[in-house]
Image (cartoon, rainbow, N blue to C red; front, side):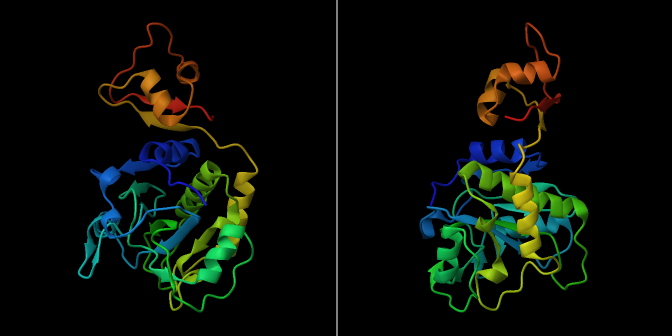
Length: 249
């Protein structure tokens, strides 16, 4: 059980894990909180989108469709491994699932077979939709699978969770098949291995008004460490558009 990460903490966790992110306009306040609670959270849920084309996929996940308003997840993981943040708060991604599965996730124990739909998952799980047709033929590129691994590990690391806190939609709700095309047990093994090691560094593109101190505060990294990693000395001037190497915490 955990309080959901703030938008800034989520961004910092993903960047620290080396995830390449795009912050979509308005994502920090885009949610379904007026329809129910967001949190406490217990895990991460992975989906496939049944769509092709990144721009179309991102748009659908942001806006939703008839009968299911957006956001449909917190982030979209594209074929090239880029993660588009589209929502922050309650999202329409998990639906109702099995309370026995939820108890297993909380205890980080092996999952039972999901045979009930009696518990609201939108309250309890971060959701990431992966760009894929879900037909078992559409490929899962190496960069995309690595992004799933990194995103999941980043959130687990931020909350002090372990790999069993990451599940697929098909393991939560009867009748669901996503994500189809790779093994969730195999993905959990990858996540477990990543969590044995410190997160790698990442990069940050300077925006107008940024300072090293402010960037450090936002990402949870000492600003002097950022300066050293980029050979920036007094008077510590940075410019919009400049790409900074962000050292691991």
